[in-house]
Image (cartoon, rainbow, N blue to C red; front, side):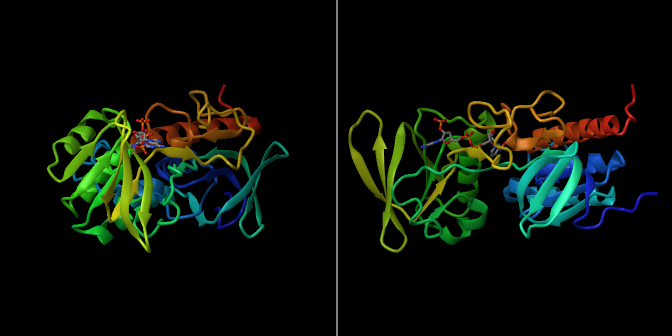
Length: 318
Ligand code: NAP
């Protein structure tokens, strides 16, 4: 019998990122008897860790949090034999029919196939005051920073699921939440949007843009402009939570085929334009980014990566 993969050894399947896609791929890869190594730079769970109640995950009637579900996924993958290390992957290269990655300390690891499950990072607005007051009233995470602004005047920027979910969460801490969106209606899923629109603690400002965040040592006001009015208003504010969408983390693979917004293109087997390199989860071009979708894509990617490795070894089931 093969020796089990220990930390920082080569593997059959390298999985980059341990969000829901990477965690599910790890479980399925290990169940396919592959030596699976997952490399994650933060904690397993990715952005799902920040979800207060993962209420739309099938079967999660007990309203477990994203953190709890991610812990379960992690444990389950480890039970099937997947190994995890915490490290940064600095480069990914093709080598001898397989792949080589370089970690933060310069160490290299090899695998026959790779699943890219690196997810996304938040998009910034790039307006005056945003970078200056980051950590001093400007935030991209209500779960992390909301408790600092109990009963304070909070602005939430964006009209998608994230802005609505996070505004809802912030409304449990303050009844002075204002959601500012540049269009005349919300982009979010209807059930998510409806909760915001009927929440007495959340005001909405449609057709409105935030132009600037002002203050001395911390956020003190925001400058807003209503479309068509040609007038700017400065309003007192203690915090600005920004949810202006996401950007895919693809710096490791500049040459991969991507869509017009930079997300990785795959076929239905989750195969990218590079043979042996699969992609799953939020980093992949997709019309709907959900934990359940990421998990499903992770399962498909691992299944097809196992078949690909069988092919390399001349063991494909014809
Ligand atoms: P999103 O759906 O892309 O929404 C981003 C919002 O920010 C949009 O309303 C957009 O306006 C606005 N925006 C973008 N740039 C802006 C700018 N420069 N100034 C002002 N507003 C700006 O992103 P998201 O809400 O982060 O969600 C990302 C993905 O994760 C989505 O697929 C979403 O469904 C999923 N997600 C799901 C849940 C859930 O199921 N509960 C929760 C969180 C995220 P426009 O509408 O005008 O483009």
